[in-house]
Image (cartoon, rainbow, N blue to C red; front, side, top):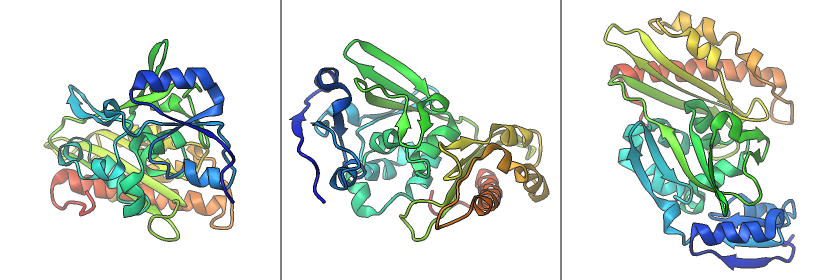
Length: 297
C-alpha cells in the first residue's frame, strides 16, 4: 500500500514546529527518523493530513550533563546516542537498551524522541525511561511543561503529548554512586524484533556490599512499561544474594497485565518477566561490584 495524500512542511526551529502544530492540530504529525511513522502511513494505519519535518532543528540534537540529570535532545539519532561515551558512563542503561533496538539501518535514522513518543509497550527506550524515572520537556506555542515518565506513557502508542506539543528534551537521572551497575535483557523471535518481554535494572551498592538503591522495569507485559517499584524497594539493605533476588521477583506478576498472542500466552509472559527480572538484577549487581562488565554496555 501507499500513504494517503498529505501536505508537507519543514520546520527550521522549535518555535516554527510548534506554530505549525498549533495551526493543524491533530491532523499533523512530526517527522524525525520516520522509522515507525512512515511504515504506519504506508499501511494506512496512520493518515496525517500534514507532515512537519523537524530533522534540521539543531535545538533538538543537544546532549549534556546538567547537575543530577543528563539532558538529551529529542532529535538525537539513536546511533549517536549509542556512540556517546560520556552519556553511556552517566546513564549506561540507555546504551544497554539501544543494543536491542532494531538494526544498524534503523538506528542510523531513528531518533530518541521518536521512539519515546511512539510509545510501543514492548520498546526498549520507553522501558529505560520509565525504569529510571526520566522526565519529558514538552513545548507548545504558549509555553512548556515537564511530564514525568509515570504520567507520560498512558496506553499503547499513546502519551501525554498534546496535539500542539513537541517533545524537546528528555531528562535522565544520573546515579552518582561509585558502585552503580545496570543491565538490560529481552526475549524476541530474532534480534531487533519486538520484544516478547524485556527487563532492565539498575542498582547501587555501598562499600559493605549492601544495596542502597534499586530500579527494576518490565516491558512487553502490560499496556505501558512497568516500573516494579515495590520489588526494587524490597531489595534495599540486602546483599542482593541470588536467593533474595529470586524471592523478590516471585511476585512480579502482580504488577503486570500481559496479553496472549501467537507468540506467547499471558502466563508465559509472566514467567519470562520473572526469569528476566532476576537475570538483569544479578547482572546489574555484578556490574556494580566491578567483577565483570556487561560487554553490551
